[in-house]
Amino acid sequence: MQDNLFEFESAGSSSEPTKTKKNNVEDKASPLAERMRPKTINEVVGQKQILGEGKALRSAFESGHPHSMILWGPPGVGKTTLARLMADAFHLPFISISAVLGGVKDIRDAVEKATKYREATGKSTVVFVDEVHRFSKSQQDAFLPHVESGLFTFIGATTENPSFEVISALLSRSNVYVLESLSKADLNELLERANKQEFPDISFEEKSKDILFNLADGDARRFLNAVDVITTVARDNGIHVITEDFVRKTLPSTIRRFDKGGENFYDQISALHKSVRGSDPDAALYWMCRMLDGGVDPLYLGRRLVRMSIEDISLADPRAITLASEAVRIYERLGSPEGELALANAVIYLAMAPKSNAVYKAYNQMKAFVKKDSTRAVPLKLRNAPTKLMGDLGYGTHYRYAHDEEGAFAAGEKYFPDDLEELRFYHPVPRGLEIKIGERLKELQRLNQEARVAQSAPEGLKTGNKYNEPEHVNPK
Image (cartoon, rainbow, N blue to C red; front, side, top):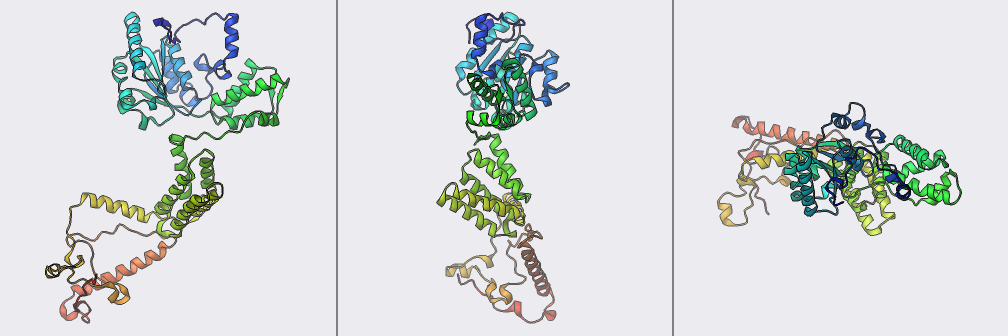
């Protein structure tokens, strides 16, 4: 940061600096991504959803009234550029703070400079916080009074979901704009512009462009850095046509964008889970491979597969739980790459297995009921009686030992607390093994109903004395 108050990282000058020979040399020495940084809002490539005519952020630029905002999007999509352009558009000084390297001292310095500037001009200062999600809650709190008073026009940039990473008080004082990865069309526009401006003597074959587009993965900075390397090597070797083979030889292979703990991580695991639930084996395999390619821990994937087998397949095919669990054990034993094939087996099996969330729903409903219900007593007949005193008090009395009953089922017996109506939250689905479970459940409910009708009938109408026989006491 410069010491002169009105020149510190200022983007507010309405006139372009005079370009001397020294300026030109320095410009050429800077990275291509920096040389191609847009100077006006109209030069920004992509982000039409917020910068197109009549869209939210463009309207903010055209209104003449700056406001605090959070720019949320993946790397290399223009968050820093937009912040600088806003300061430029409103002729305001620009203070940049990196949440990775900065701290409370940087915030104090920004407050001091912004205060002096406001006293001299009556205007606010644009304070840009890169990677704002890396600031602690207390550090984010430090901005609040200055955003509230208008001392700062706060612009935060984050690759993480601000709902989780930015404090609610700061969110409520800022508009959130979502930036998207650049499309291949956007990158192609960027390449054509750079080609015309920086290396008009070099051309690109279509296949070489496709490799660069895929390598960039929607990140303009990564794309321009790759183009910078390619064109520099080409010029050094007198090459004027960039071919597919030249790109492959010049650039190292790269992995897809994947943040092991960030928003992209949870988006991809969500896509995998939903593909399995939706019974699409190829889509499920695609997302699994995307995550493995991005560096996810395969054992994390394995644990999630076990969760899917329990939550979305369950008793419709109990083998799914076994197969998913075994896939995890196989990976632990064999490691990569052999163990990953076991995970692939599990993914495809789970995707094709019959689906049921009946147990998942029943569990959650029963858990919610128990949480809000009172603490009800266990019926005496269901209590164990390991001592004589407990037996004398009636523990275990009138308990019907199911194995001694016809079909090992004590028809008509009740197992809920005496003062609670029977709850029925488990409803098997008509798929897989749960078809048979459902049929069995209906049959047991029929036997219960018949037995209870017989038990409630007048003595003379009861058939036999099955329900008047001496009750068994649980031998346990």
